[in-house]
Length: 61
Image 1: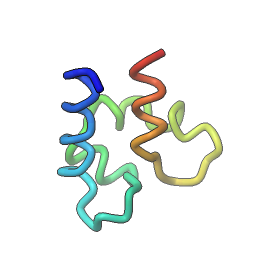
Image 2: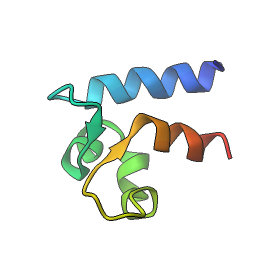
Image 3: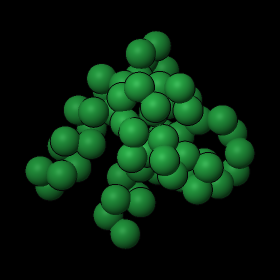
């Protein structure tokens, strides 16, 4: 895992306030503003949340 990936994991864990493994838009806005700015793109299926795997996949593309 790259240093960038480790940083993303740490930020995700800090932003995931209810520890459900998902970030809502509000959680992303509070803890991961770059994710929040692209939330609808990352949440392409319109579920109302994004996962760490989705964020890492985008970051590593």
